[in-house]
Length: 165
Figure: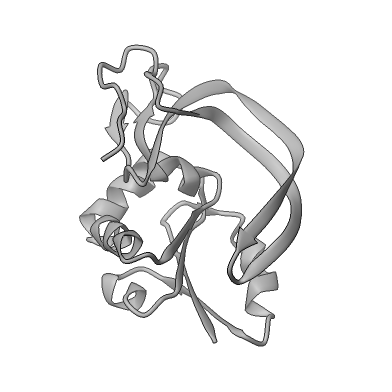
Protein backbone atom coordinates (compact mmCIF):
# COMPACT_ATOMS: atom_id res chain seq x y z
CA UNK A 1 0.00 0.00 0.00
CA UNK A 2 1.35 3.41 -1.00
CA UNK A 3 1.06 5.85 1.92
CA UNK A 4 0.51 9.44 0.78
CA UNK A 5 0.45 12.37 3.20
CA UNK A 6 -1.01 15.67 1.99
CA UNK A 7 -0.06 18.62 4.19
CA UNK A 8 -3.27 20.33 5.31
CA UNK A 9 -2.09 23.91 4.97
CA UNK A 10 -4.11 26.65 6.69
CA UNK A 11 -4.76 28.26 3.26
CA UNK A 12 -5.00 25.04 1.22
CA UNK A 13 -6.51 25.39 -2.24
CA UNK A 14 -7.95 22.79 -4.59
CA UNK A 15 -7.91 20.05 -1.93
CA UNK A 16 -10.35 18.00 -4.03
CA UNK A 17 -7.47 17.45 -6.50
CA UNK A 18 -6.52 14.45 -4.37
CA UNK A 19 -9.91 12.71 -4.41
CA UNK A 20 -8.85 10.52 -7.33
CA UNK A 21 -5.78 9.29 -5.42
CA UNK A 22 -7.83 8.42 -2.35
CA UNK A 23 -10.11 6.27 -4.55
CA UNK A 24 -7.21 4.03 -5.62
CA UNK A 25 -7.32 0.64 -3.85
CA UNK A 26 -3.54 0.52 -3.28
CA UNK A 27 -3.32 4.04 -1.86
CA UNK A 28 -3.75 5.26 1.69
CA UNK A 29 -4.14 9.05 1.53
CA UNK A 30 -4.48 11.27 4.57
CA UNK A 31 -4.29 14.98 5.34
CA UNK A 32 -1.75 15.78 8.04
CA UNK A 33 -0.84 18.76 10.24
CA UNK A 34 1.90 17.36 12.47
CA UNK A 35 5.36 15.84 12.20
CA UNK A 36 4.44 12.42 13.59
CA UNK A 37 1.88 11.86 10.84
CA UNK A 38 4.57 12.38 8.17
CA UNK A 39 7.04 9.83 9.48
CA UNK A 40 5.57 6.72 7.80
CA UNK A 41 4.52 8.38 4.53
CA UNK A 42 6.04 7.10 1.27
CA UNK A 43 5.01 10.28 -0.55
CA UNK A 44 4.49 13.80 0.82
CA UNK A 45 2.44 16.31 -1.13
CA UNK A 46 2.54 20.04 -0.53
CA UNK A 47 -0.73 21.21 -2.09
CA UNK A 48 -1.71 24.54 -3.54
CA UNK A 49 -2.07 27.50 -1.22
CA UNK A 50 -4.01 30.74 -1.30
CA UNK A 51 -1.15 32.30 0.68
CA UNK A 52 2.15 30.56 -0.06
CA UNK A 53 4.40 32.63 2.19
CA UNK A 54 2.10 32.44 5.22
CA UNK A 55 1.74 28.66 4.80
CA UNK A 56 5.51 28.24 4.39
CA UNK A 57 6.05 30.07 7.68
CA UNK A 58 3.38 27.83 9.26
CA UNK A 59 5.32 24.74 8.06
CA UNK A 60 8.41 26.05 9.82
CA UNK A 61 6.58 26.90 13.05
CA UNK A 62 5.15 23.38 13.32
CA UNK A 63 8.42 21.60 12.49
CA UNK A 64 6.94 20.26 9.26
CA UNK A 65 9.49 22.05 7.06
CA UNK A 66 12.39 20.27 8.78
CA UNK A 67 10.57 16.94 8.61
CA UNK A 68 9.87 17.36 4.88
CA UNK A 69 13.55 18.10 4.27
CA UNK A 70 14.56 15.06 6.35
CA UNK A 71 12.17 12.84 4.37
CA UNK A 72 13.61 14.15 1.10
CA UNK A 73 17.15 13.37 2.32
CA UNK A 74 15.99 9.78 2.94
CA UNK A 75 14.81 9.53 -0.66
CA UNK A 76 11.10 9.86 -0.06
CA UNK A 77 9.07 11.44 -2.84
CA UNK A 78 8.09 15.06 -2.20
CA UNK A 79 5.62 16.70 -4.60
CA UNK A 80 4.69 20.34 -4.67
CA UNK A 81 1.58 21.52 -6.47
CA UNK A 82 1.18 25.20 -7.30
CA UNK A 83 2.06 27.09 -4.10
CA UNK A 84 3.44 23.85 -2.68
CA UNK A 85 5.89 23.71 -5.60
CA UNK A 86 6.89 27.32 -4.93
CA UNK A 87 7.64 26.41 -1.30
CA UNK A 88 10.12 23.78 -2.54
CA UNK A 89 12.31 26.41 -4.21
CA UNK A 90 15.29 28.00 -2.44
CA UNK A 91 13.80 31.48 -2.29
CA UNK A 92 10.47 33.23 -2.80
CA UNK A 93 10.55 36.89 -3.84
CA UNK A 94 7.47 39.10 -3.51
CA UNK A 95 8.95 42.47 -4.40
CA UNK A 96 5.56 44.01 -5.29
CA UNK A 97 3.83 42.79 -2.13
CA UNK A 98 1.38 40.66 -4.12
CA UNK A 99 0.92 38.23 -1.25
CA UNK A 100 2.83 39.46 1.76
CA UNK A 101 4.65 42.42 3.30
CA UNK A 102 7.72 40.13 3.35
CA UNK A 103 9.69 40.84 0.18
CA UNK A 104 11.98 37.81 0.30
CA UNK A 105 11.59 34.48 2.12
CA UNK A 106 13.82 31.43 2.20
CA UNK A 107 12.03 28.40 0.76
CA UNK A 108 12.59 24.74 1.63
CA UNK A 109 15.49 24.66 -0.89
CA UNK A 110 14.65 21.20 -2.19
CA UNK A 111 14.73 22.66 -5.70
CA UNK A 112 17.61 24.74 -6.97
CA UNK A 113 15.27 27.50 -8.10
CA UNK A 114 13.74 30.79 -7.07
CA UNK A 115 10.11 31.89 -7.29
CA UNK A 116 9.09 35.46 -8.07
CA UNK A 117 5.49 36.54 -7.58
CA UNK A 118 3.86 38.64 -10.29
CA UNK A 119 0.67 40.64 -10.18
CA UNK A 120 -0.88 38.99 -13.26
CA UNK A 121 -2.53 35.55 -13.06
CA UNK A 122 -1.54 32.95 -15.70
CA UNK A 123 -3.77 30.00 -16.66
CA UNK A 124 -3.27 27.33 -19.33
CA UNK A 125 -3.43 23.56 -19.94
CA UNK A 126 -0.30 21.41 -19.54
CA UNK A 127 0.77 17.84 -20.34
CA UNK A 128 3.73 16.01 -18.80
CA UNK A 129 5.25 12.54 -18.78
CA UNK A 130 6.08 10.74 -15.53
CA UNK A 131 8.79 8.10 -15.10
CA UNK A 132 8.25 7.62 -11.39
CA UNK A 133 8.58 4.06 -10.10
CA UNK A 134 4.91 3.96 -9.12
CA UNK A 135 3.54 5.79 -12.18
CA UNK A 136 4.78 5.84 -15.74
CA UNK A 137 2.73 7.65 -18.33
CA UNK A 138 1.23 10.96 -19.28
CA UNK A 139 -0.69 13.33 -17.06
CA UNK A 140 -2.72 16.34 -18.11
CA UNK A 141 -4.02 19.25 -16.13
CA UNK A 142 -4.02 23.00 -15.91
CA UNK A 143 -1.59 25.57 -14.62
CA UNK A 144 -2.74 28.61 -12.71
CA UNK A 145 -0.32 30.85 -10.88
CA UNK A 146 0.75 34.39 -10.12
CA UNK A 147 4.48 33.92 -10.38
CA UNK A 148 7.36 32.20 -12.07
CA UNK A 149 9.90 29.70 -10.79
CA UNK A 150 13.31 29.73 -12.45
CA UNK A 151 16.31 27.47 -11.98
CA UNK A 152 19.51 28.98 -10.56
CA UNK A 153 18.55 32.55 -11.25
CA UNK A 154 18.51 35.70 -9.18
CA UNK A 155 15.15 37.33 -8.64
CA UNK A 156 14.93 41.07 -9.05
CA UNK A 157 16.52 42.65 -5.99
CA UNK A 158 17.40 39.37 -4.25
CA UNK A 159 21.08 39.37 -3.42
CA UNK A 160 21.55 35.63 -3.11
CA UNK A 161 22.71 33.54 -6.04
CA UNK A 162 21.20 30.06 -5.78
CA UNK A 163 23.51 27.06 -5.80
CA UNK A 164 23.40 23.32 -5.30
CA UNK A 165 23.93 22.23 -1.72
